[in-house]
Length: 300
Image 1 (cartoon, helix red, strand yellow):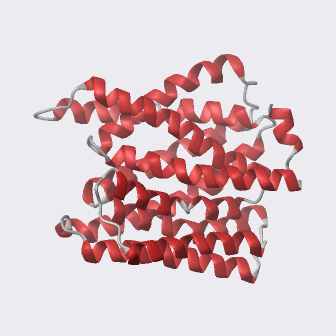
Image 2 (cartoon, helix red, strand yellow):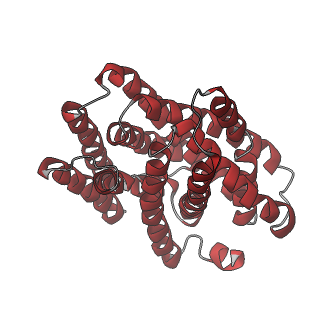
């Protein structure tokens, strides 16, 4: 399968597949965010998810995919520390603010920085029409965050700190997206990068989560927490794997922008499952996000 995927790089078929993968990653990333913000403490949920996907990735990394080339080990080390910083900030933001406020800010600040990073590292250039699409998409995402802030019923005492943390988290989204796109292109077999990334990336947060769980006065039951972690691990594989494969098959910036339509899916999930209100204004803002993504795609 890896040979077939590699053969599609730079082709029209590869572009079409990258588009499908990026949109799929958007939906799955929204599901992932809702899983982390939902029933349990976000730090504990993240630890359970990381433990699950590290355990699932280990046999593939050690026994199935080709062994990483020597130049990959420093790349994995960099990805390890970048993702630890991102996950700490993400969990911190979720513990401070509402999901439908924090998530749009995190995702809304990412596309602009990612497109710049893709230009600096990969030499990718967006057309004027595509930049217009980025602006429309970001306006919709950040407008959604502002709307949610205005009408939120609780959490206003931690709103400012949640917004600051969310902006820093958005910067790290752009940082890891660009860096990981470089990593998956640096190895001959993309599945080698994915298997080893998930194995290495899941080693630290379970320890942080366990220490937090042990210090709680009334810690949650482990069974339901690990069940959510297992589901989240599967979603993480599909979501991150899809967008990383999209960045290898096609341009990094375009895949990253299309992934940020996840905010539309996040709002729908917040309404359907987290019982957060969705009205006509939010629907209009979600339509603006989708329109921005379409402009980026058509402008290329």
